[in-house]
Image (tube, rainbow, N blue to C red; front, side):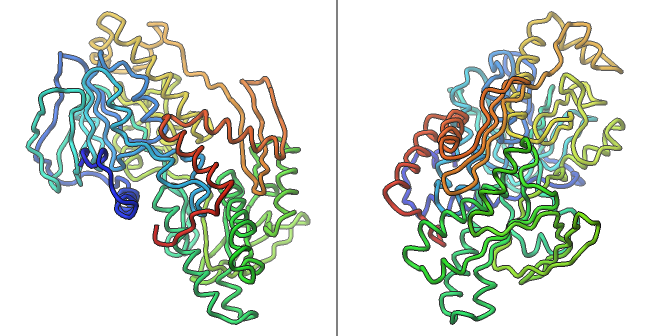
Length: 507
């Protein structure tokens, strides 16, 4: 399968493969069956490090860890890295989905040393025997090795991978907060498959609405889009949808374009509450200046097939109930722990009370474990679940592993420790993780953005508007991890200046 990454395919087959890979379900549940084989990489008598995930934390850690000192295995059912900050641009074709993905092997092949990539689902972490259980196996490939090693594995038969150190970076999944109907009728926006689903749903609704007469209530419902969540993902998604309607749809279906209504529902009194007040107020003014309808202080209580019910709490304390019909519903609010992580809560006594993520100490070591580390959205350290947090944690943890390898007999001492595992790090003068906030960015639509660029507590730029939109683009380009993806995103933006968006239902 890895060889397919290097073959030229037609656009249709490439898109089909992308949908298939993106729709792979995340790992779930404990392992209640007996595994057939235990894989243990023992190359040059180096410690085995297993990385779970292929997101910001996992790939950043892979890029920075010294693979000459460790045998590294990366396990993920998704064989590509996704640049999530530009995901809201993909449903309407501002940026192509394939432009913001990079195959995992492209990162792994740049490493020197023993790196194994395993395209499979991790269904269980087994701290009592230092293994992870995998299933739905597609590929096991030892990269940078001249001789191929055959593991004798079968695709649908569970196996276990042995580790000396485990780095969990599986992220989180969308949180519906127990609202009935969200999972059944809503669309999320965390993966490529979600983007394709939103596009297909909206395009299908446009086709249906075009066959109905103007003034028909069903036509009005089909042309209503509800985005729940006033954070960066929700606001940017609403802005991109509005851009498509006003810049593209208006040219070839003007009658439909003027009837499309985008609703943005947020439970808090303001959108983008992570920004300072003047920026969030500016963002609200920009959104209200378009045809986007804001529903602030409104919490969704129920989702039905054709409408949702939101309860709005007014400043005087009264609560009113509003019914909002929709054709397309996008749920872009909140995260919760994946079943793989909630299962691990039960296996480590110090994690029994955790509900959102694994509790870690200042060295990103999972509390109650000597050899499991957590970074990104599946780690609770009092920081927001953002890409820059995961990236910085990964860089820091790679330095920790470098120092562990440099200290004589550190691995042996840690393996023998029976309690207070973080004391060994303190005695060895390891510096605790320190997060540096670089600010926040958000696109509002209509070529306007807001930005607060900082370095820790020092602020270098705060503003909004057209110039900030170009700053937003430049900074996002600088964050993309590969030159290949950076080039493709630039090409998409240049193409947008001369042609319409590629908004195709079946792509």
